Structure formats: C-alpha cells, structure tokens
Length: 169
Image (tube, rainbow, N blue to C red; front, side, top):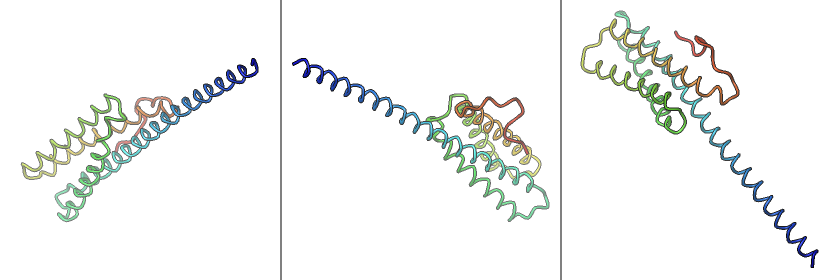
C-alpha cells in the first residue's frame, strides 16, 4: 500500500510539474509572439516614415517654378501614396507604441491634414509650400527618432545619444 501511495504522489507531482512547465512555456511563447508583432510594427512604421520622408524631400526639390507640372504631380502622387502607407501603419500604434509616441504620430497626422487642407483651399505657392513641407519633414524626423528610442531598449540596445538617429536631409 505505501508503494501505491508513493506512486500516486510521484504521478501527481510529475503531472503538476509538467503542467507548470507547459504553462510557463506557453506564457513565454505568447510574450515572444507579442514582441515579434510589436517589432514588426516598429520596422514597418519606421520604413514607412523613411519612405514618406524621402518622397517629401523629393517633392520639396520639385517645387521649383521651372519644374514640369507632370513631374511635380508625379512627385506629389508618390508622396501621397507613401503617406497613405504610413497612415495605414500608424493605425496600429495603439497596440504597440507608448503614449508619447502615439501623440507624436498623431501630431504628424494633424500637421499633414492641415497642410493638405490648406493646399486644397489656396493656390499652390512654391515658396510657401516648400517651407511647409520642410516643416512637415521635421515632424517625420521627430517621429522616426521617437520610434527608434522606443524600441532600442527592448532589443537590448542602449538609448541613442542626442543628435544620433535617422538623418535629416
């Protein structure tokens, strides 16, 4: 009879230990998957910001009185497409980004909406539009730096020193 009790205790202890081990492994797996999704979002958003910033600066350089209207429209369309891709990526910010980054991205969206609203209501002015786009470019840069500062510690990397990060054009 004591052998049966020992066997029962051993079996229950083994079952309990296996359950705890499986539970911990599942929790770790969930955390890793969540981190992978978060990292993928940061990478997608960062790349979308970089592409939008590149297209924005190409548009700024195209805002010359001598620029062919077709070429200018092509640059404006490229910027519009890249900002749409960025807006799609930014929609998931509530799942992955801290409040300060969400606010930075929200300000960027508002600045872009203000610019496009003003552009739709007034005839384009090469000088004023270029200045507004350069200001918008600074917002893109701020958002890129904010994203980099958020994710680096989670990758085991230190914080970026001031002035180091996504380059300005």
